[in-house]
Image 1 (cartoon, rainbow, N blue to C red):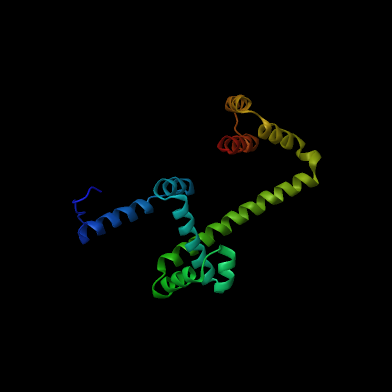
Image 2: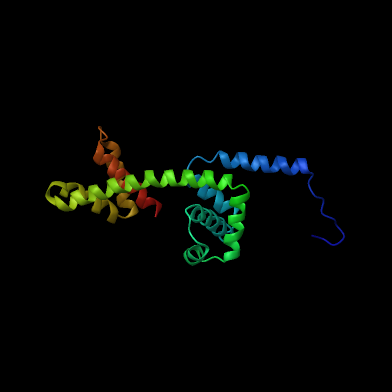
Length: 178
């Protein structure tokens, strides 16, 4: 800022409107990928890591962890933990709501992962039954971008999109994100 120019502060009403707009913008985020994009745009990696640690500290405090264990696990000072604990004691409703929702989402994700693990176990136990699927999956995972595009085009030609189509399509999407 140039010397001699004085910064003009926003009025309380203008500040509240900005904060409300910001909160409304946050509430419109529908998918984790959208949240990642927003966080990357608005926060530095240090700020994002700091906020993520605060949320984890609050979760561990609510789960009854001691300051010492939290400090060791999250690599934070006891004063940071005390500050989060103070927020939880004075209000902490936002933390509690988000942590509750996060735990619900984790349970759903874990049950989906368990089903995938069960499927992998069956494939290992009965490889002769699953060999065509295993072979196709390994071909797709090892294919170059150009080869994957050819496979995708061939799948689009398929008249009936079955379970195998969806599995290969999922693999192609995963590998194209990497």
